[in-house]
Length: 76
Image (tube, rainbow, N blue to C red; front, top):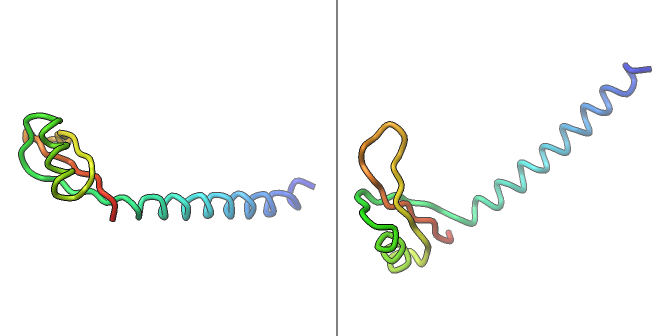
């Protein structure tokens, strides 16, 4: 009895998670990001991102580095 239901359950879960992944990609496609080298203040970074890309930004330090970047998120 367990053997009859497990392939159906597996396919249902596979379809469910495939649909979830597709929705996530669509959401991510609407927001782009770019990093600009050098960042001292979050407010200046945010102003710069708004002026150049009509987006928002904040200072960000990538893992394993000592450089600060201004990370901008803007509509694609």
